[in-house]
Image (cartoon, rainbow, N blue to C red; front, side, top):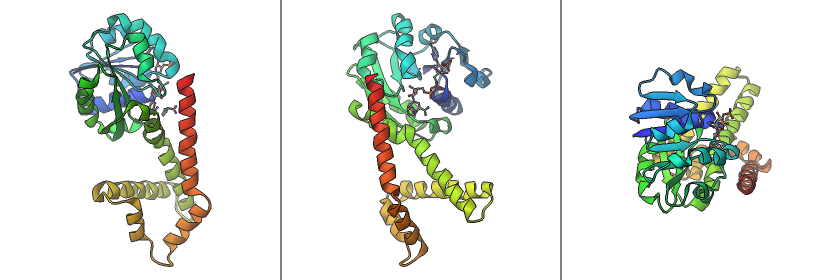
Length: 264
Ligand SMILES: NC(=O)C1=CN([C@@H]2O[C@H](COP(=O)(O)OP(=O)(O)OC[C@H]3O[C@@H](n4cnc5c(N)ncnc54)[C@H](OP(=O)(O)O)[C@@H]3O)[C@@H](O)[C@H]2O)C=CC1
Ligand SMILES: O=C(O)[C@@H]1CCC=N1
């Protein structure tokens, strides 16, 4: 598969790293106006680093646009004459809907909105996928690419904004929870590095338990909360302080913001 990534900042370079680790391409063009974040991939076989977006499009079948919303329209305009009916156009831009891309490239082009997160760099992304009408038969190919880089879910386009908040911004939300746990552990007497290790491994164990047991979180909580014990004491205090409510309100605030971005 001949793949191009246009825009190799935080997310574009993470996708590149995941693809390179997995060797899941026959050629990979990485294009950015200043491709510094991917310079380290210069020597990788079949990887080309460029600042020529047109060259990248011309030499690829799948083109992933990993640009900020404010840049994507301009870049699409400059490459649109090179985009054919056989190209598969993917965009990860938050708040940029398929209609906006169709307005520039045409509704007859295969357009797929993909929403991964930065864990794609280590093959652990939760990636949501939604396609336009023309691109429906290309969805299995998108699944094939992104299943190698984590887990995928096909969703209707009107849920992509919500998926962005839960899965893409979600990385930051979970990181903050890990950091808070670390701060708590330091207060209880651990060195910072030890506290970090304890927090990360416990977080990893919790997610792994849910993935492997397929049980509801509350069932796992029941197995930890000894009656009159310390766990329920801590959990109840967290809820008195608004833990669940704060998380839900944060998710809703993030969703409201992404909907404003869509209109701007
Ligand atoms: N970061 C994340 O975790 C996630 C991001 N997204 C979405 O992905 C998109 C990219 O985000 P992110 O990677 O964080 O953003 P970045 O700003 O880190 O990356 C965008 C890259 O595109 C480059 N660029 C700008 N204009 C051009 C151009 N004309 N030609 C080629 N390259 C260009 C930028 O260069 P320069 O720096 O010089 O402007 C930058 O390197 C956004 O739309 C974001 O909403 C979605 C999910 C998760
Ligand atoms: O914060 C943002 O707007 C982008 C979209 C999701 C992750 N980063």
